[in-house]
Length: 297
Image (cartoon, rainbow, N blue to C red):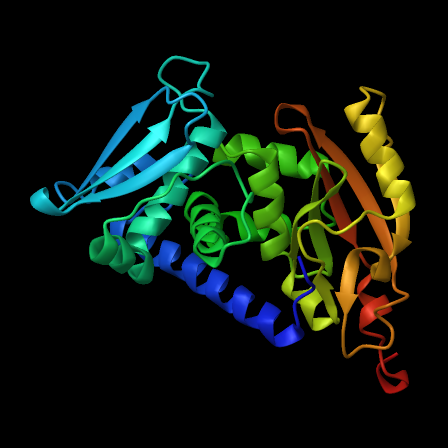
């Protein structure tokens, strides 16, 4: 996939932010303000217009939203194949439900289903570059991890995967989706890269990272040599080095900041074996992108 221009990235990010804001509106209307958020309770609040149905759909899909015009009803199907504990939904199941709720609550998505009657299966977390899917993913992350609950935790100090695992347990979300949302809420320059099949599968940047001129590379981009070696160690079942280092140009498209290209990046690695995903948390010291003026020193 070709690299996007800066205006194209800005539009993509704006659309995802609007989806997150819509999720916040839904939670506020329902007075849901404590963890963990129950996405099925959100779905139940829309009865009888929306009905949620779970089942083991094997490899067919993780979630699917259908509109039945004859009954003027939406049906949200979610796959329970990942659930292991009776009475509890796996974080991936919860994310799938929240993702389909995004298709329901985002006006343009619902209008499309009403107009065409066409539904489509959704799979996993952050597996698609289609705007309609990335917006539903953004809605799901915002619904399950509200900014006013997770944001203060993220910005207490320097972020690590140990922190992210703790937050994931509290919010009943996957490490992958929690890391993505934490980066989104961070006030510091940071990014999350997801690696699958030895290439970039997804990339999310904090606003400070974007403001510093560091934008995501597109899905399918190649990895820096040292990161590729870590990927090979991960899939080979070897012990994974937890840290590394490089420069922003190795991971990002850089614009409008002469310092961005050579800004040093700290890499933190975390392997997610069930989805064969290697997560890379990137952090850049703020003064590397935003140097203080001499007068401010």
